[in-house]
Image (cartoon, rainbow, N blue to C red; front, side, top):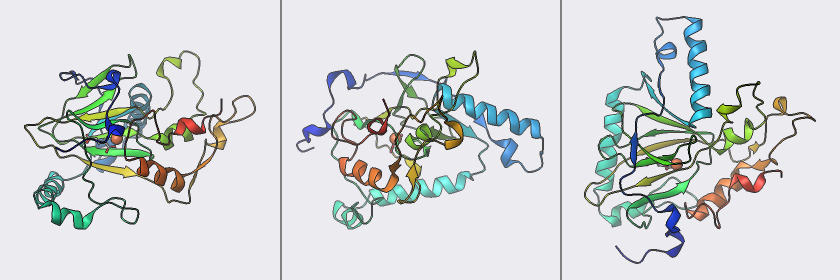
Length: 262
Ligand SMILES: O=C(O)CCC(=O)C(=O)O
Ligand SMILES: [Fe+2]
């Protein structure tokens, strides 16, 4: 590996612990009440909605089973990505990520063991097919702010709240006794890689159109509960975020905290 751009080198307190605690505590949510059309039990849907709400508030992350995505589809995507990445660098660079094709190939320099520095996802939410063998995703657990590894669960997808949901739902007021759940927050996460095994992961980002203005839901704000964020243009935000290419969270790169109303 060549020289690593110092912008990617983390401060010591953000360097990953090489053997993080592996947790299974992240909620696993069964989506069969919405994917199994033979069951039409409104109370099952109601409790599903509640469970998703609690998972979003307590973890900002959850995993889904019975999601209705055929395993064969996932396997075909995984196979196609293995074939793509096995090609020569020259071939891959034909599909390089740039301003015109922001989802293209990105041969990002990284300093092992950190595959992807700590960050929050900028979009509304992310659906992730994590590598089922290698794992490597770590989440900053809201309960104690510890970094915990997310143990891969076969044929599940990991879903996490992104910055847009944090802003839109920032006006949610909790009833007495419910404060411990905290708010809908876009939780920090990062990825560690190991030098022996390749790691494949397939994130799908829910992003709005570039002209979208992101702002707290007006129905949730009023004089007593004023908006906590200034409106921002999604297109500008994501273009600036991409220019920073997941560098350190606390420097250079644009964050929703910059739009926070003190
Ligand atoms: O590879 C992973 O497990 C997560 C990737 C991720 O966090 C991202 O692309 O935003
Ligand atoms: Fe992410």
